[in-house]
Length: 114
Length: 113
Image (tube, rainbow over all chains, first blue to last red; front, side):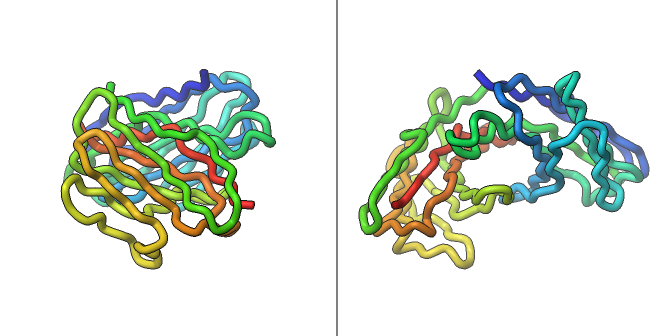
């Protein structure tokens, strides 16, 4: 059974801090790992990672994948209160013929205090 | 932790038929469930919020007459894709948020031929 584990489950920091969120996975036929940010409603897409060691960056957010150790991290630098959200990690795995099945972690709830 | 199940996990149907997808909360009660759709290599897109005992709230651009949602009990929400067409082929995921954490179902892959 495919498994995605995120840590920590929740995190409280102050504005300006840097945070690192973790996602480890055990899946069969890994294809990609995705990070989402979820606030009130629909999760919004952040990154898709398919190759090891290549950092993806968007503003203050960056992410990298280690396919050997089966994990990914999401970094947020100079955090702002607007970064408060649940961050979801999901892994796409399985044979291509079986479709794009996603296995999600339960998320990391980040709270950024002023 | 909370468990959300979906049934079926995949379905293939002919164009013009209707397909019902069930979303169940197995160990908690959910007054609200969310239905998402995801096309390949794209993000989850919220379709609607399912509310127990009342009408669902649909996101802009989602046809309520085409995607019928029923949330008749505290543990079951159903999404019916009426008169399905090939462009409705997608991955449909439901979720619930019982303890301020989003719990997703495993998803239903729909292929309309």
